[in-house]
Length: 195
Image (cartoon, helix red, strand yellow):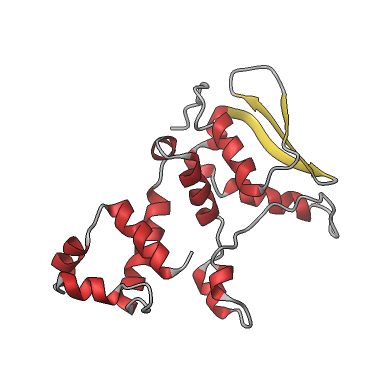
């Protein structure tokens, strides 16, 4: 997503118009409109505002807020959560920043490891990116395993006795995380108290 798309998303997310932005910044509406034309590079102050918006937005999202979003918006949220840190991206040379901004961390789906445990740890770290939403509050256990490219989710609901397995052959990282949301934070299952 380029800066102009991110600016549009920020405006929509905040419900702001150019008039609102002009009132906040002290610039005229025409000045805001002119400086945000698609053929111009956005001003540095606006890029900073976009980054702050995106950072605080993803930190403040809750399971309840995500439930109200469309599937497409939740997919975008997942990709954003798994995107590479801008500071890291700025240090990489010989890459197309536009393309890199669309990339995100993904599951290692082969299941093969050069060092024992690497694949498992990597995949668990991706699932754990969403632990603050409460995905583990619904389960006694939840983990994903990959064998020869086949992802299998193993889980057991809290206060239930059935061990469950779900095959996600053909699914990508974003789709698998969405399915985990469906089975946990988007479900009506019993949630354990942690406080």
